[in-house]
Length: 364
Image (tube, rainbow, N blue to C red):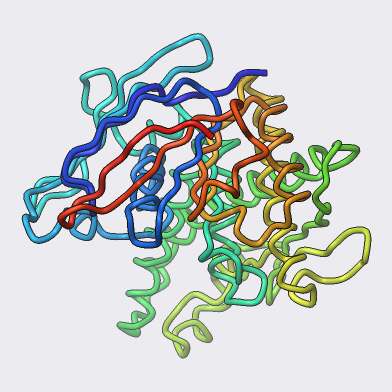
């Protein structure tokens, strides 16, 4: 099975890259270089071809190469699903991020309808033992890959909730001011909860019977205070919410619980290696489910994914990626981490010269 593919990538004044152009041919990609050379900056740029702030959740100002601060731009040719598109995103100093698809202005949400990009980065390694916010974001990223309109539902819910929270903090008592906002929250909450539940079902199906060397995870959504009727809970909870200064019920309070299926052990009680393996397993399941839905595998961004895997697990991961037909763009500090890929992958060395990242293609 083939996948979505970036065939040409260009960066201008993005982080450590003054100007770089790379041609990809659809095979997995290994980006090799020392820490700080600019490997992660390259895949962060690619993550901006999906809605949001990329996998580092940076501001548009942080993307700009220093000290010039001239603004930045990323462009790519994207091929897949029997079509090809030119995608650009950029920001001028002091201006919001812009998007253009095939020469026409577009929204970030439009990117979600055009492509599917999944990522796994070292910052996610503590996902199971940190706050629920990160797990919700992880779930919503997976949900967005299946339902591009999920982003609009989440943004709509969050805007209505922010407005409601402002009323609560201002101690507004008049119920009239709350009703329209709460109705919007209920409407979008239903969409969010339906999309999330559908995603968990798709992931469970993708994991069931999969030929994989990575452990399956049993996933469930939990909430501190489950409610059957959100509209009633919001209306009756105004006094309590006013005392707290924020909304205390709704999908923004959900958490993602995971259990190592074969062992019956909660993910937060697993070893560091097992937690990493569960994350890899979920990313692969997400990719398999998308490939089944779309007829094309998504683009995968895997930052330092091989660093904590033994040679057998690395080989198993590469075999799965190649079987899936995914353009997996991976980073690592040494070429030996990618030996078992051999000619199945493209490889590039990233180095830093005169405070500028330089990219050179090599053979594994």
